[in-house]
Length: 255
Image 1 (cartoon, helix red, strand yellow):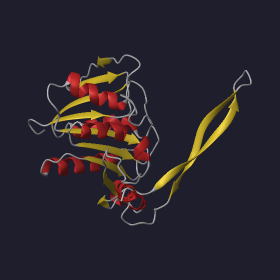
Image 2: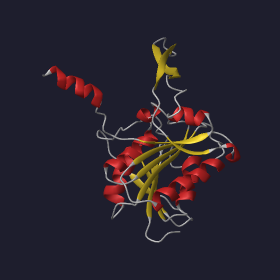
Image 3: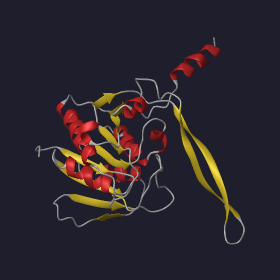
């Protein structure tokens, strides 16, 4: 354990999810850990925050010797309340995950895991979101823990920068993964399909389904290509949603 290093650990799958247990185990190898996570699964919450109801936090008893809290709010709420209420000073690093399922490409927009990391970045804390391409509750995190350790070690050994990294790990045995690959976010979308059903009273309701539609899966500089070819993808992401090419066009309208 490195003296003086403080790491905040969070997620969107909930306090008891196997992924955050794996992430906490790795983070504790680098310094003092404070864990805070939603008290229930919050996948797909994006950057939602709680403004119309109360927020509560509960300190959890933990025999492993680190502080741990459950929060009734969203992943972003967890980061906000940790930085503003629980911690006396900002941590050196915020890590979120390990998410059960991909957050590559456009999934970053919907992800509570990545929104928690982005919130840390907004607050000036280097942050990383980790995801494993396996939705199963009994997913094997052996390879994921190896690369989480590698990424955290790399980040803490370099000059201090404020960033948010979106790290996705293939669902493959450790010895088949080729390594880390820095890349850009691939262009893709979800094609929604609303399944109409009826409740016992005969009234219609809808269940959101759909499928993922990639547009750049063969572009070698993208996260989707990296993952499909056995690499861990690392994409630096930003909360600034300005589309600069369109901005240049719009400025031309005024000339």
